[in-house]
Image 1 (cartoon, rainbow, N blue to C red):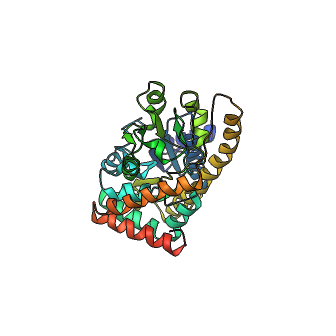
Image 2 (cartoon, rainbow, N blue to C red):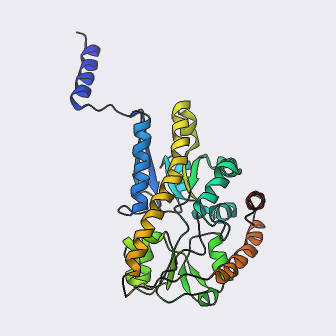
Image 3 (cartoon, one colour):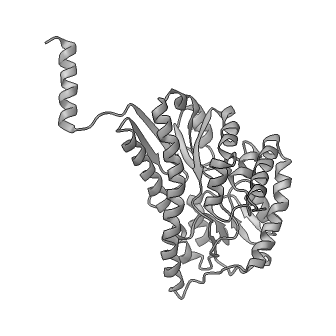
Length: 337
């Protein structure tokens, strides 16, 4: 047997012994969540499904927030080839273009994840996101939402007036502008520092994520006045990857990525909504935690403030104006505005 055949035989023998074939495509995706939280676990489940659906041809490593770069730098890292992709929040990149802040969290627009998912997949959002990301060499694979976010607070909050002077963590983009217009004092902190910020009094409250994730992370131990259901934020959670790498994928794998990302959008919002029910019951049974539910009047007051900021934010760039027109047209067509 010649040398080449011996080497091939060795590879085949090793593969049969281990039962494992090397993937044709190996990708590193950074998450906007730390490991150990439910959000991160669901993202890992998505990666595992892609591997199974491609019969092992694709392997995706999901890395916790900050593993390679900060949460606001993953877009640059994907463009530079340092990361292959991310599962993150679009509004984190509003520093690149205000359009990302507006489409990433159109504060007060959506009442449920399904409404946002409908806009992305059936209302023009998918095409618009790819148009916005193309100059950065990035492909928008799909997106959805974790859910209508709860609000974590160390002080009682029962309406808009209670936001006056409140030191709160809010992500980059429109959400900071809306809270500032409502009288609060937004603070820019990554999600990984929210607990420490609350426990040390750096912030009084936080716009972070859904109730169950907050509760399981111990947020309510240091901030025992959560607002639930949320009144404010439903950010776009996106799956994106390097555009050149996307274009190199066979059509069948591209189709698997696309359909699995759409499935992921429903999967994460459904799983977290179910987890929220149990977490809220547990919190309400704890005498040290008070769950606050804003009245419909207070929610309408906040939404009215938010809508004034949509138009102002749209004026910040041509792309932001394009987002504003697209989102409002969809809302009007569905009777949601």
